[in-house]
Length: 177
Image: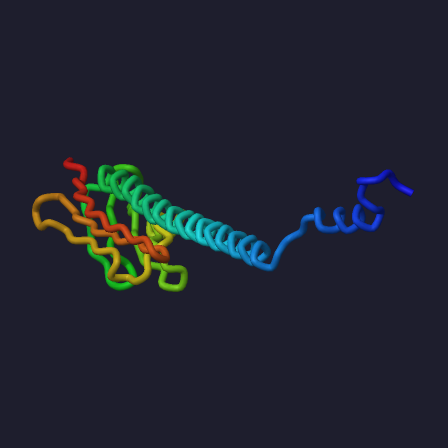
């Protein structure tokens, strides 16, 4: 059958079976534990990424509210020759009669939407209205204080969105006729 000194077919078959490699139980456990570790790290990374993105969006939202309200308040105060304090929910009105008959810019708090609203009144009638800050949690987050006899108004505004909050004080100078 075979040559003397050569292995028998049964020995060759046994040799092949013992040479075939596979995973031992220990190797399988090590592989699974490495995969679980990598999945845990990736999950943590993804969670932190979405948390940071949400926080960044909240910070941008409150910064945009502060900037937008700053632009409108500064513009209206520069055109106005006087300021009259209002009663809740109206903070007050800037009067700019030189621009037309009885023109005023009124600021009020919209409690349902949590917004600072700017209204333009001409001749005692509402002409237009726009939101200048969206993330105002409560009426006390906006404060208008008139400096008596100095033609100045100080406005403190706090915008809050989820985990981000920003406060700013605006010193506004009224038009001097």
